[in-house]
Image: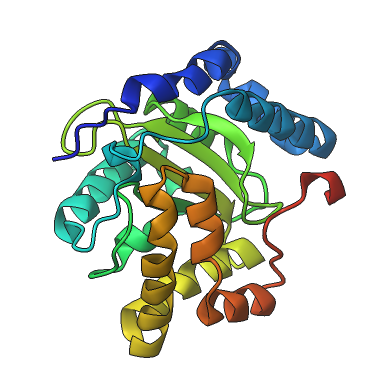
Length: 250
C-alpha cells in the first residue's frame, strides 16, 4: 500500500491553485471551455502555478515509485467504482451520449509503471455537457485546462484522499469521441492489450525511463517513456505533436 512521503509537500501546488480552482462553478468552467483564448490563458496560469512548486520529488517517496507488477484488478475496480459514482450524478439523457473508460498504463494488465490511474470521458460534442462537468466537480475533481496531449483534450485531476491509492493523482481526460485525442487514447490501450510487440515496445521504454523516477524527476520520466516506436506511430497517425505547445494553439 503506497504511503507517500511527498503527499504533503506536493500540496504546495494544490494550495496555490486551490482557491481559484475550487471557486469555479460548472457554468463558469463551461464558459471558459467555450472561449478558446480564455481556455488557453487559464491553462497557462495553472502550468505556471505548478512549476512554482517543487518539481523534483523525493526519490524515496512512493509518488514516483516504479512498480513492475501493479495491482491491475484493484486499480481497475477503483476506476470502475469512481466511474459509476460520476455517472450516477449525470441525468440519463446526457449519460446515454457519453462513455467512461479506464485508459492509460494502468488499464493494461501487466504493464509496469506508477500508481496514478487515468480514465476518459468521451463526449458526443467537442465541448462537454455542463452536467458532466458538474458531476466531476461534485466527485472532487478539479479542472486544470487543456491537457498535454492534444488541444481538444481537457483534464480534470483529483488527488486521491484515502485508501490504497492515497496521494495518487487520478486524471480524467474529457474529449470528443472520434477525435484525434480519443482515437489515440483508445487505440494505444487496445493495441497494448492485444498485440505483444506493442506491449513490449511501451514496456521497454518505460523500464528504460524509470531511471528518472529513481532521481525523483517525473517530468523527465514522462518525456523518456514517450520515446518508443509505438507512440511515435500512433502520434503520427492521429496528428498529435508532443509536447503540446500552448503558444501555438488557436
